[in-house]
Image 1 (cartoon, rainbow, N blue to C red):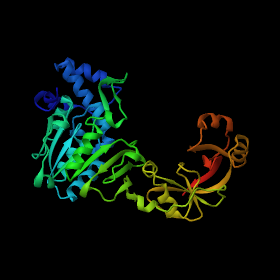
Image 2: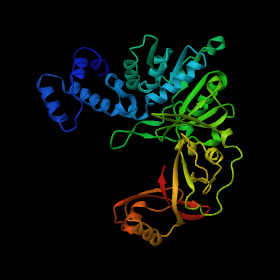
Image 3: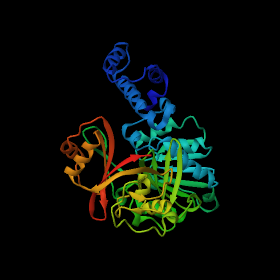
Image 4: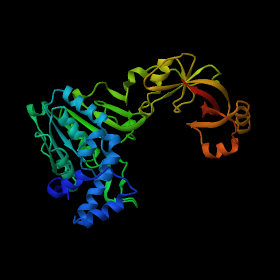
Length: 403
């Protein structure tokens, strides 16, 4: 079906479709079949139209010229992150990259856009065909149906100019849920290729990177690599492992990306961080919430150092300080009230302030926000934000205003 959608009648049909609209898709399909198009071709074209519309958030205008699969779209690297991967390889001085586990080809396309040659493979034949179609624009980029373990990698001097990029499959082929999505796997030995194979190649070749899950355990970070937890617009999208010249720092790091943000937080920045708070923060202090990539990387200490503050409780991420510091990788709030958490007291404070709309943020406590909202019986014209968390072992409620 990939070939039918990329040539002749199928290509023309796909290009002629209007922007996808779920409300009119059934009627459009009936009309196209009545016009003589094969039912399976109509179904495939409408599926592509739907996926392309969903893909705009990741790929922008380029989504309109890509072939996609549901799983492939969900797992694909968004353009901004893929371009960052490509810049690392280009800066390392390589001329080509083996993309092992390429999926629909998002990273491979970024490598090609950066001027690198690409030899991509995927162990799923249908997905490999989709990647091959997406790479046709670049004469030095190819995609094949093959297992990563079966690829003959460069050695000797050739290995100095050719990088290796792993994106192991983290789903179980053939095991799908009711929506058609395949089941995720979380253990390193369940990936394909598995973690042992990735480490073996990284020990043997000089320029190796790997895209792994944000849940990658800190204890598994090789001492020779950089483990970079990356977020985009606050959503943690990956933990990438970088070896050799691809690594910018050793150990754990957090790479915070967004439409107007590109910041790096490292272990060095977190060294010697002060201990957690011992008392309730007071009104007029500042509360900082680090980007989720910083929390995932275990680098909240970088925030306490940067603000001369202290974490409210170990692991919650929130840092209180008397210093007003602007950071591209942390949200900043002014504390307008602080109290031990008590529903009746919080309800009285919100009533006195005329709060009818409340944003509830929580971390490190087992409070149900929806149940609490009903118990607070909010009424009034004003809006407020409350942070429910811990100071040490004590549950607290902090009314805050984002700055």
